[in-house]
Length: 274
Image (cartoon, rainbow, N blue to C red):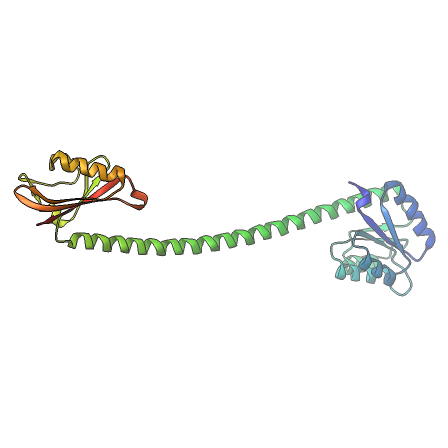
């Protein structure tokens, strides 16, 4: 533990006690701040934010140690509080514990080595408490961030669900429109398989054969039509064939390439009876 990052406030109306504490803490590298009474010490605490530990005498004029430490606890609850006193009255110790919530009661005269060990233990406790508070703040902050993310995700899911419902409705409407078209419409894949038909196409007879999904285009149509469909898909350009005779009937054939995400993957052939 680096003592230089900690400041210790010693409060005692006896200058000899303060001088003795200066000698003890100077060897350890702690920065020592002193005050002769409680009111003066409270002012120092407002000015010096690096004070992490307070050692106070119990019997002082104007404000005793118990009352002083109670105010320290009220205004600066994170600071570690100790009482250093030559009096061992049970009532005084009890008051200091109950009002000031002191960490330790040290008797005068003290043993320098024991005092240093007590101070190190107190500052270790301060660092542990501070680390726990920082961790708690970080957890709270992360939880808040996670909450915001979840709320955004929930909103995004709702929006996406709404979009999917609209798209599904549009798809259903498109299928209904396709089924209602009074002439045959056939969807053809890049591999020259029939993948889609409307109701009119399902009743279409080519050379006495009813068209079925999954069959090759060449199973029903001549090479000229197969080649035109292939060219439309690869060139991504529409084409037309007027007055073409199929099974003794004349049709106007229109070929349109698929678009959007299906560009280059297929085409639609429409057969309009003449």
